[in-house]
Image (cartoon, rainbow, N blue to C red):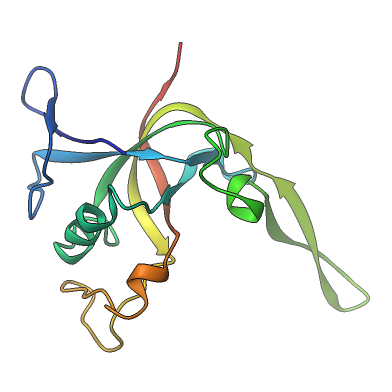
Length: 170
């Protein structure tokens, strides 16, 4: 999974063999998502799943521990939909549905299931949530530490948020 750090003020992109320890306000981390989706209920929200492999696990850990994958940070996902490369399986290999509360019926809240859609291209988001990251309990949000016992067993991490820039593949 290649990494690219793109300076917003620079012309072009710099392909990096190593990931910087921290991204500045001028840089956006670009990651290949094994599954890239647009939420069904909120068309301005996207999420990406990153399959952890032997070739990217250490770099992803650096990214997380440098707090460049945290809440309110900016990341660009590049993807070809969901599960097409065969890296993910099961629920991780599809966009799934979003469950939203509906009207009350008989005093009970009902829920509506809205399908999410695969997205092909690049989307830059401000992260509003991340999931699947095995953190050491009690570490502060701005200094996350990966749990060394659980990290080798982690297959997928995910982040989602509001799109700042959307570029569909032509």
